[in-house]
Image (cartoon, rainbow, N blue to C red; front, side, top):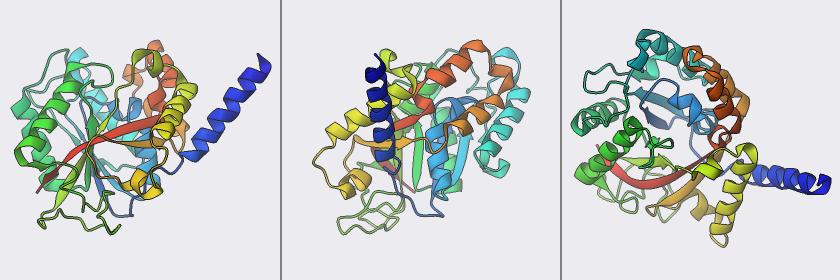
Length: 287
């Protein structure tokens, strides 16, 4: 048993180091993270935030509700600002929405209301990439999945396939390896990346599960060049980010004290999302 655990530990360290740099950005690039509730950024997207900010990316956060299901909306709004400060996202880059059509609760949100808020943020921030939930919403929460549905519809209305937007300077490189900040038609575009929902048995296996995610992805991508792994513009491309420092995510989550009940301690410690984020590129939108 001792040797088995040692082998697992060594494998985890090896895989973690191998994937410490699976993305490249240029300082000054802008990213828009769209979440449903205060604390989503800390519970689910901490690896992305620590890596992007380490690389000098200007991250903006759009949170579509105050999390007022229990009447704590004003408290949670302050907690969000404090948590974002831990990630070095200043308050002026945090957009918190309090819309009657987008209230915290276990119901689907109005697609039009979500689209309008996301479109307004895209126009204001003009990001190189937008990051949000996938169709599973990580936890299946209907507020999470409503964001994906609206963003997917937005891609359908005013978007491109990822391959059409391959000149995007947020990391989708052209065939010559350059980063140009526009699609082939010369329009500015924003790549859409969605956080992969892991199966329940994998979701709560902590650092070992995170290492397994990285290892399996390494096997899947075996044989592809480093440039393709970093910049592949094909739709459904997997992008991987291990956390630059998991402690930062824990510190940020501690700012959400009104929500930090005992089972959230367990979630933060044993969730793979504390240690690694896996994304798929689903397309791009122009502006």
